[in-house]
Length: 371
Image (tube, rainbow, N blue to C red; front, top):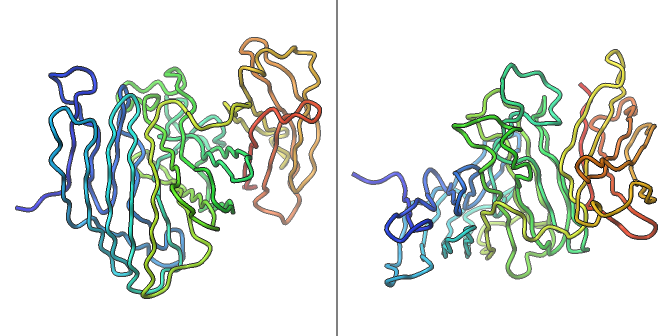
């Protein structure tokens, strides 16, 4: 009869009850969860020509082999054969269930022909609406998404946080790097009150973090956001693209560790972005107001009178830049107004908070499209 995929179970809560921890189902898609998490975003074996003018190619895991685990084993080894018109691949997965699930991935790729855009360690998620969405949606839920931001750890030590959005047109962002420490589609907002969804439980959906093993060389993290009108569609994808496109006869290896987590463990110790909000200054004009909140243990301890300043950059006119502490929550708020430069669309924005020479936060990066 054949089969559609594989599901794996493990006693996370108690010895006598086996909970589902991972599923490989559909093309090269797979998902996993840790204790207390529910299925959300997906990983893929490979992405080919995603976001180009031509049709995307979807590789398929056509065969699986599972090593029989020893009694009381804490890991499970799975092998998969990937097949596609442009490439064949051999994969080895080591699943490590627990409070968070870690998965070691080894891949060896053999190219039958040149691939224009190779997406390594792709993550696929859904973002319909959030605090920063400026499109009206007739829904009782304040936020609807599997992930709320892209986090990137650069080899320079800088950390980037890019809030996700549901754009009006296809949007592709590229973050160039060499030997990154990692990237992932993350969920930072864990408050049920911000979602109000008892069925989907978006506040319990895992983040996924890709930790490269070995030298991946030069390339970039691609973020693709697709306009969507329904939460059933995965409209966000992030992956690594090597600087040099693979050609016919080439074989490549990419190893990495994939983490499905509830709380970030690799993120910077400095301030993190906890929310991004955008609104009109004048409903009749193009000027927009941005409100970005940061938090960290250090920021909470700092006096409201501390000399915390913002570095904000954008193509356009920036006015009314204000930084102040929210004593209700212990967070620090950056507010500014942007009048985009005419003829320049989209507008790329970047901001950090600092005190003297000390950088207090990760870099907030954003892309604003004038309607």
